[in-house]
Length: 502
Image (cartoon, rainbow, N blue to C red; front, side, top):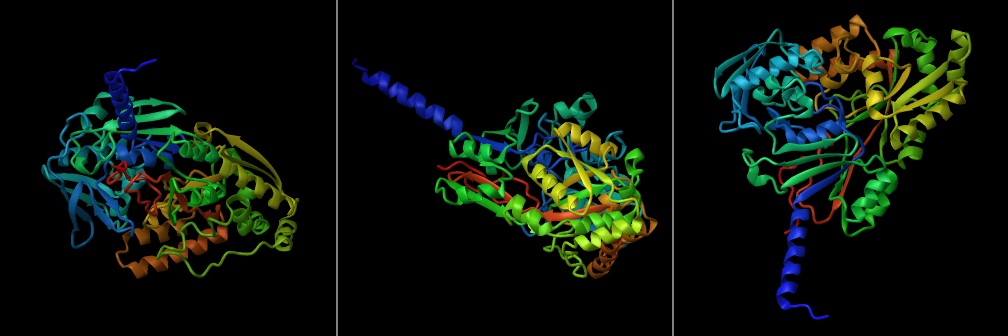
């Protein structure tokens, strides 16, 4: 059969055109399906990845965890550290055309402080007033010094949404409108979140892809297979067991960073009926559980030794890490002795967790190790939405918590151990801990803060409302043709500078 030259040229042009369209879409394989796409209510790491495309923040961090400008270009503190003055970037609009200005900042801060289901209330509680000076200048007045505020504003508490959209829709999380480089096109639960480039973005010249698809693919090996097949450009949270395959594949690139994150075993010590258990009421039993575990075994068996076994919420890379507490070795005899001292035998335990491959492995290893000390452990894996619902309500006895970490220790330690902390879902409350953490919030001297956080570490390692297990490292894999990827210690995929190969 003869094929005309004109037809052949047309077919080739169509094929080339289809290829260019495909290349302009960044497809990201995600381990988890994000929760609410509203910075005020969102609470997952997966959500933070998507927010990096949707919602700019007042400030951000760089690879060295230093605060850098984003929507705010300059800032300064009052002499008594009770007011933060921000200079805002001019000429910025939200994705619906609403101008970004000081009034928008005021709206957003107050919305996060007052919205009934906001998870940012604790983070922004010290702000007593937001004063609009002029369209590009705003003052955040505080009830007392709050040193971590700038760090807090590098995350969801600093993300700005369109006041117009937020006021007009009670279902804002289903149709979020922010000021980031991409705007929402479609979301199909447990399937895909589709975004397209916002042409009015203030930094559009540094945004290389026309669209981004975040695809829910919970199995790491499946994410890798689809990446190798060319169905994805990027896959996040690659399992350590898949790292050798990536390193051996010249068409792929591995992007890694030491993380701020921590995985810990949360114990309900004061929230509802689930706290009315021997392990919830008796610190010696919690210590026995810790001594029955071998963090290095968990790291080796579940993650091939690629993570960092540790017993603190703050990673060793932080200047605020306490050097006074080495990781305790496994000691079954000591664990059994504590159980005997309390009396009544080892209690039955139930561990709730999100039904991911990594959490499932950890749960099974904990079950096996703790069983050797006499603990009878049952496992309750739940899909993400159900697990988070139970987590927020405190409806668990033990829970495998995954916290992505922050550059400043306050959003971690106050969140989990402060009586009013936003992640304190297990009912831990100690007036001494509150006193220490509030003093650390007020202190502007780094050495003074280090000393205070060392005291906080002493306290939570003695009472063990949570048992830290390890710090994950961040592993992203990408097609080698994707340029500009840099993973920071917060593990977030930032899209500025990313571009397909030319």
